[in-house]
Image 1: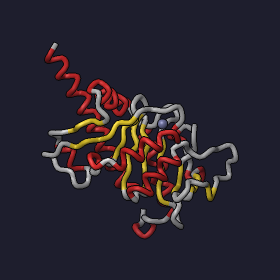
Image 2: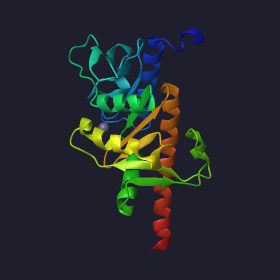
Image 3: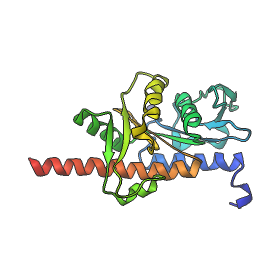
Image 4: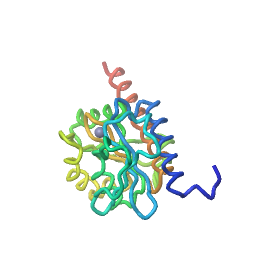
Length: 221
Ligand SMILES: [Zn+2]
């Protein structure tokens, strides 16, 4: 792909479709769950449709929403599509962090990371002693990285108030992810490739956290 096209909306749509397929193959957006957004020309957010097979989303099936209030400014031609339920959360991450791309994962590793917090009776997971921590901006492999964990709700937009609280908490200032118990995670970045990198990094960190917890439990038994 020529570099001159790297920032056009058409290229972004192609990249979002490619990532949905890639994340589906890794089990992060399976069963029509999960989602992604990226920058549209003119300052909007491109939003994947709701309740569809994520590996089959086409470039002309994205909604464009205004991130200042989440209202849809452009709909795809297919009238049977609805915008993702993630819209209000993606817009909140954009307004709070300047994130132009957010991934919503339904990965098992994120759910199990939430279980670790529940078992510990805390509102976060603490990740340490991993080289991969360097993949999060401003974090080193000697840091203890805290990721907030919030409770699930019947509908995704109802998570917004808990996310606002987590975003305002100074303990979580370096986090680029929030885990939702029994559900998955939201992971963001300044642009689509940053969100992709953070998504890959956090899934590794969640998997490592859960695997180490399992090993330590076995050692004690
Ligand atoms: Zn979800």
